Amino acid sequence: MIPIQRLLNRIRWDEEFGRGSFEIGYLDHVARRVVRIPFSRLHFEEGDRFSFELEDETGERTVVPFHRVREVYRDGIPIWRREA
Image 1 (cartoon, helix red, strand yellow):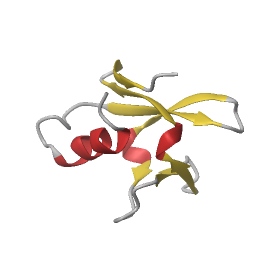
Image 2 (image 1 turned 120 degrees about the horizontal axis):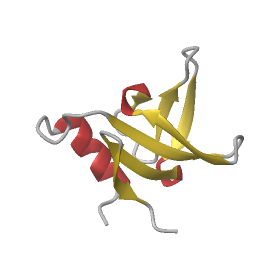
Image 3 (image 1 turned 60 degrees about the vertical axis):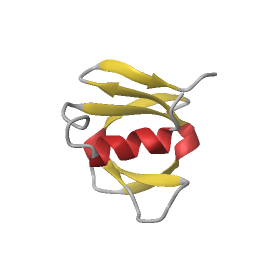
Image 4 (image 1 turned 180 degrees about the horizontal axis):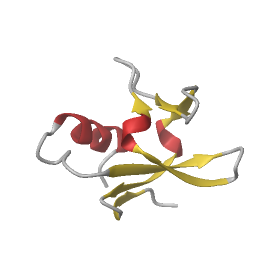
């Protein structure tokens, strides 16, 4: 299985692969479930290999560690899932 950081970088930087509508599903500890969000709401800080920020509807950002990403979807179809 491809590491999540590598897959997210491929979505960001590979123009051919990055075409489409991407979503990630991450484990939200407050909601106690996997929450799906559009890739466009993710922000990556240069050099941070452990986390990314997600922006909610109000513009507030929350740090999410990569290990909490559980699934990735392209055009609604799952393309990556973390093994339990």
